Image: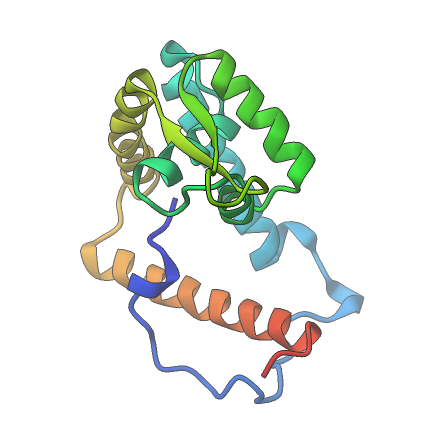
Length: 177
């Protein structure tokens, strides 16, 4: 539901290895007051709203993501799509089975490398994917009711900083520079 990290504006922020501030303490920790909890609840309400809007098309919240990623060129193989959707091979196979049954996606074995399975949207799949951005815009705009343009931009910058920190922590865990 957000722009790819490559196109996201970056806000100035502390060096990745600066000490973490202590905003939360175990003695008075209230989960419902934490940034993580609030973000999770927001994502949940976004997901419910998108699924509600997609209900007439028969698409689920899990199914629109791969359709959009395929339609925007973010992925063209099963392996790429699984990475983009953060699914394991089994989960991606089951999801593609459902999309193929609905006639929205086609799997094609690569002629150069039989291990590679290419994906393409069918005409109905392209048509379904064409409507997804309008639904996502409508849901997000509704959730941003009462925000000014400046507040919206500031929120995106702040969330981008949290994402940058999260990615730096993940890279550290994986032993990457």
